[in-house]
Length: 574
Image 1 (spheres, helix red, strand yellow):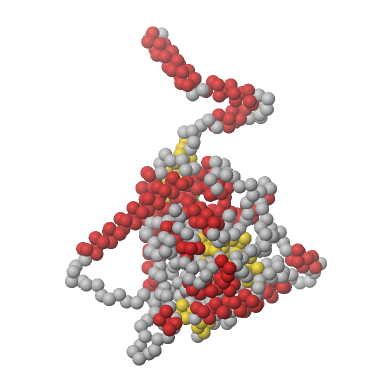
Image 2 (cartoon, rainbow, N blue to C red):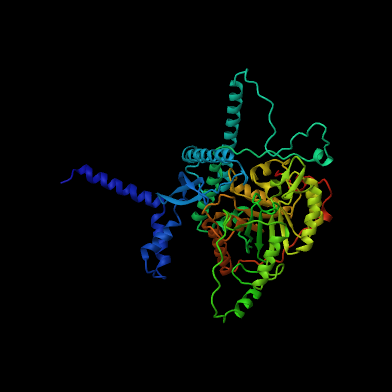
């Protein structure tokens, strides 16, 4: 027999348990569940009960972050961030995000520069992994992954403190340096204009050429900020059981669910023109194809369908497979040309051969990457080997090109961002005929957002890239500014792309006009095109897909005056 005290203790525990359950309204909840489910007679009664009662459980909170070094699409190290949440008293892996890497090293960089860039990249990823697994893991514990804005503020403050620590460390190192080692006169940076030889006349063009701005330094470990912010956004979408693109749209529009959504038009890179190949043409970096605004991404052009019908009964021998060409990391063919018109004429001929009409069934865009072409000794752009043009002559050349090829609806980086006056001129001359897009001017979103003196030229829109310390909230805020100023947003894929397809969801949720993903080759890029097709199918099924009208270009000639500052075009946030 048990002692009398044992029965008393057991009875006391039962009374405490009953009181606890009544306090949590468990009997009432169970009764409500049974009354609600009885008429339905579910096949899995306990599963239905579990689903019903789970609606009263606590909201999931972050319990762990895990960072690790992985490889991107070109075999370079990058960062993956995993998020674990406490869900119904269990630790559960929710999602992961892989950051794309970005490098400023040019195609013709020396082996020493390339090796130094690889070491810097490796050190940055290693530091980012440490930040995620240590400081950020502790800082974000017990926070709700749905609180994106609050978490991004904390990440921004953490990054600001790291920048201050780096600056203090740099000052201490400079003070600790021996006084006898006086710094020598700084040598001219690579690419800067060299001093003229004695007796040599300097043209006015060379005197007035704005110097290239230095590349914005990237803090070692900054990938941790962008990677964590993106992982939190994906976790928030998973917790809310909605697609990431809808979660981003709700964040941008203050939880107001959009009745309709549009898809960004893909800029599909077909040709990658090597600027440092033996061929003469240096101006064009990418030739891109853009489907018309009114056409579904899955829907073939009527002319193309008719062309295929006419060839359906051809039972002759199949043509031999084309010879293999070099494919770039952008997932497209690498080619070289001797003049500017050759690649455009090739695209025109190719479209004609399959029954497409450029300008109607398909449009073209070119990425000029003009900032890579400046010869600072001559003060001119080297568009062909041995052929140079001043900034003003470049504007005239583009006007002539657009008049000859009206199917060309977008020029990306036609000039350096420093040539503001020429950006004003080209916008007034061509702004009503095509999009004039700045990509090099908008690499660092965080810097542009907080600094009203950033050199953002007058343009139709900018290419935004999710890299380094960029946060999801930065994208939401900056695209809101662009929307308010009638600028278009293009989300761009960095050089070192990863298999993470979140960029497509970001573009759809933010309402971007275009998305620049590279070519239709390489798995890390094709997976994003497949994601874009899946979202289109989902929106069409839900009847929330809105078709865009034809491309509309702003008329800068009526809205701008020469010398207009970038802060007048894209104002800083209040």
